[in-house]
Image (cartoon, rainbow, N blue to C red; front, side, top):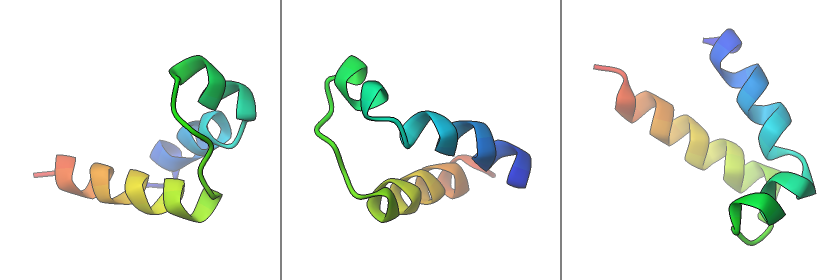
Length: 44
């Protein structure tokens, strides 16, 4: 699982990523929680 999280976390942690995606900045904890929920829901 760790290999899935690392690259995504690095991308999400940058403010440039938020600006480029058009999403408002969010606390890292919220991003990680949402990302974890998304990944877990995507796994059958």
